[in-house]
Length: 211
Image (cartoon, one colour):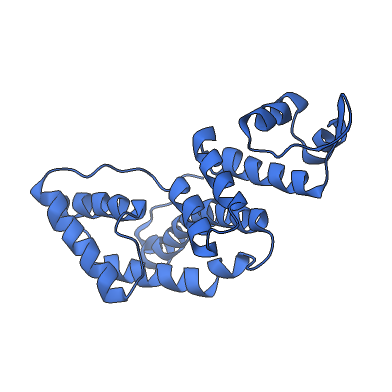
């Protein structure tokens, strides 16, 4: 276990906790007080770290994802969906006319784009809440453009980072890291692009942003 800890960067007490919780499969027992761990344990620890440290998932959500990984009968799409839903904000519907109008708009957009999205997908409620707030503020006319841009990113870039037909741990790790880190990168890139475009359009007005 000490070697596994050194290779993974995960402390021994934490590894023992993951073993007790069933997140990490037991090593091969070679003596009464000694077990051997292999690369599969190292890969699982990398995945758990990605979910806990990058994805900020609670242990209960990590357990659901690990259970899905170990269920070989579960189709690949459902496996990725389990991880994706665990990463999604859990937004409760609001019993208001604004919410219903925004939900209808989101449902219509998804249908019009031909997207195959489950009715209970958490991102539906997340987007519905956002659209409701945007409409309240007189915004949202460009939502379809954003949707089409997201589709191109996912289709042409993001899904290609997920290994298909191989190690299920590696596939989920790629999804978690890609979803979280590319999401953060996209937000930062938008802010940089906004500053650049603002400078191009408005720099002549004499304003200079603080360093």
